[in-house]
Image (cartoon, rainbow over all chains, first blue to last red; front, side, top):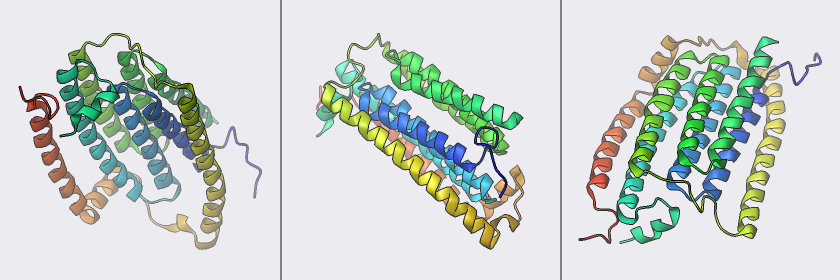
Length: 108
Length: 178
């Protein structure tokens, strides 16, 4: 096995580590922020990180199924953003602020 | 060598933009940083050879979803947040520590798992499978093998459209009956 340099030879693990870093940042955003819009943005960040790992596996395993899965994830993400933003608009109409703590008033 | 430079540059841009998404206190800056992240991820897809996915990423995320976010932000007219982050130093420290533990766990699993993948490749020759990385093979796989999922996504989008209209017609919370 030839000696490979980690800086100049880009392999699967580079993309996977980048994906893990982006996912962890999105998770930190979800846990730490209070604004509902920024929360939704952090969720989009996590979904994008997962997409990176799907496409990386698809390339390095010579299997196109991963890119199909990216399509599905993108559609789910768009639907989730639409519903989340509709909920945010609903919260804002009632309380004039989009803080996550107002969600407890939504229960029937 | 050039692809290595490209990867490191794109990774730096994407990580910096992603950090500024969660660190900016004004949500409109977060939205702009998220758009930058989307463009960086799209360029990463190009480096991986997934050209069609990269185009869809630009159109759907950096176009449609980000415009949706910015439109809603414009609707709200938010000022700088006073309380942008969660209260409590101890719970915040616990949350950051849990995120760090998750990141370390994932990176450790990756470094262990890629060795296993290399070993599997060496034994059973995964690379021998025919694989045309172009849009046509993508479409053939989508419309021949995964056509049920595709149609289910169509139904999901219809349901989401109806549900969003129903949500935005309500007067804000189930308590608001005035």
